[in-house]
Image (tube, rainbow, N blue to C red):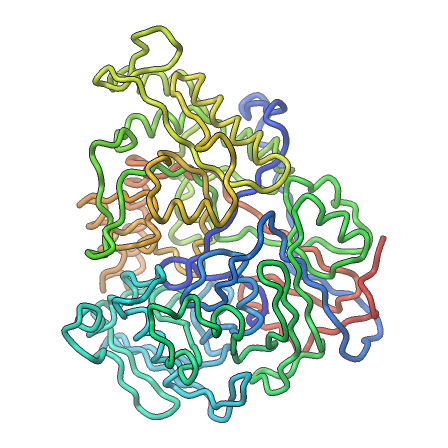
Length: 593
């Protein structure tokens, strides 16, 4: 379903931040070494239902979230998963990709790679139009480079991938009016020249921008004002399978089929998308109120035997993690600045906190087999680059206590909590998102586990944070946050530079070292076209990251989607080419149990 809801790209091009929804009361946690490894469930990524198609109809889509969507409905500017979900209906992006996330010609544009000349040529079809009837041209592909590279750009996507375009930094710094590496061949063809031409460029989300935006509309708005403009907030124009008819801010969107969609008009006339709370989505699905919805893993036992919908899914390129704030973001310099005075820069503290928590127990007891213990910051989907033998951090509170003692963290006053190596008491502020009934118990479990080895941790503001507020405070480096729990979707390219590089705005930990710079540079080097070199570069970085531990990877995760029995077919598999023109509704209303 390449133009539906397949895996979203992350890193510096189209990163998405994922809310973390945990499962089961903390009181029920049994350590994994006592329970064994547990069984991991397996799901089909596709659903097929037989029946007589109706003509047109209205698909009801639940955007499952405990918060409203921000309403920044533009690929260049959005930051949260809810907005990304909406955008895909109106703007599927520039190119397609296969089951290995390698860019192919199954999408809107054809993409040709020229390693020798370090160039990529993009060709778009003639005669396609935006939703307002204006023709789509190559200027709409060029335009996003000038927005994201503009010093007045308010988003967070100006990073190493865009800086890799020849002439981009000169334009960004005001030393040139044009980006020299962008050659407009004709109205439908663009050739891009890069400084470094590494293997990541072949991957979706790996460095070749997939943005295409209506220059004839957005180009009339000053870059600094784009995020709040009508074309981003209320009057969006795309070229995708559906166009927006109405928006209730933060709550719902009504789409209608776009007759002139390049990949064939959808058979479904209308999509009604509504925000639905995770705590009620299962009952809503069983009542027949929605056709498509993301399923919360903490309620798996309530829908595992559902009869009116199928649960489809796959192990996604995502992981949950515990992050440590170690500095701030220098927007003017475009890089992180590590603050050595912050206690979280102490590696021993981070390692002790990793040994203090039991990821296996959480995976096995809280997630019904829908999570796997994470041993790396590279997900297992990338079989060539994920080091399955990479040693993670098992539950070992004695080791945690020993690491603390060896590093000078000692409880001098007998209050049960260690002081820092200078003898000063400290409390770490822990930020975690709301979402699902058990988000609070799981956050409390972490706090309790850290407390048991003598580390004093408290929730920031004494409560969980709403999704948008959580990421806003992370991005602005709120000093109240020392430790946080989040998740990343790593998208189609395993290259971690866009999340952990010195110049990556998404590097929310603000961690940077010269050795990390060198290891990431090896992954991005021209030599990385050699598969043996590339694999070793990934293995080296994984080992270093797990030693330094800027974040603790906790769990790899299944994503599950409910598909009502009246939907003819749905495909969540990576690289699927199922089109909207091939999807039908088999009844006038969603089927109830």
